[in-house]
Length: 256
Image (cartoon, rainbow, N blue to C red; front, top):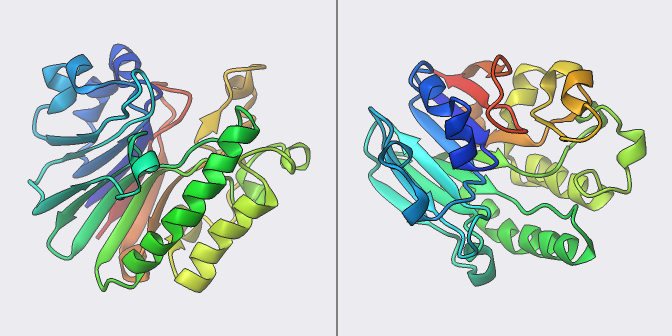
């Protein structure tokens, strides 16, 4: 089973850059999208359901903002749109598709980089999402949560860790929250299990400033986080960089 997660930084922009032509070459079973920056009326037929896939979406209320989606080859048994937390759901940040005992989730955590107000909101979302993540981990289901978590967990997950200790995305509180998910709760960072020591090749996001991509001054903030039994089925991962559809690179993981 091949699962891809990709922050598109605008589905219309990604489409113009060849994302859907590439998608048809991937043999992906499930594709999780973040940052659609579109509403239903903006979506073309190809965006709604690429050839061979069903499509499901959680749009933000604000136009041109946020939004997540899932493409699946097999029709899900059920689709859950939103978390039930009103101000989080208004930003279109969560969608879950169930297949038998497996759930695959597309999640887009807020960024706090635009200022103190958004960082406060980010912390609030993290705190209020925690019980849901705990419940999922203890549900007895196999779960993969894909998405842009907007947090680099360890120093090896970003190029300039020394200069970013006080910046959103690498704050001690954010990193501790992820550590708690991995230790106390039991979620597993699938990429890190497959590549425990990888540094420069692990990045999935690069700023559009200062030639960051060309210099590979990146961050690893896109994850597939799984329940332990599901993680054990993972045997191969790729960060696709041959083409650029966004300021993020798709993360591809194969599961037995």
